[in-house]
Image (cartoon, rainbow, N blue to C red; front, side, top):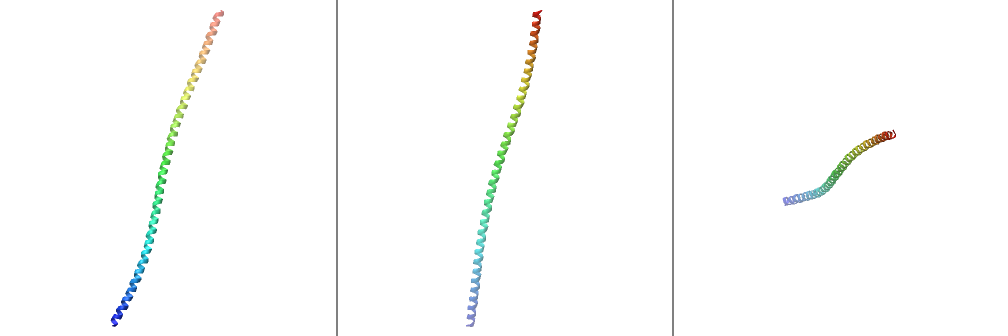
Length: 122
């Protein structure tokens, strides 16, 4: 009978140890579940930040392309303005030459008229 009483105490102690171990494992499991949930939330946050960074990069690329287009447009406008200025200068030079030529022609004609008047008077 004594052996039976010892066995019961041993079993009771063993059950209590198993019960404590079970409770300890349950608590550890709950802790790990919370830790896993926190890790998932953190990963989700990083994914959102990554998406925002990618969108920012896309926007920056688009802005850069727009500036490149503006620079190209300005370059073309400057080239056109330069060509226009050169053409105006050429036209101005041509007009100046034509004017000087016309004035010289008038002067020549006036001299011829003076000569003709001088011949008439004689």
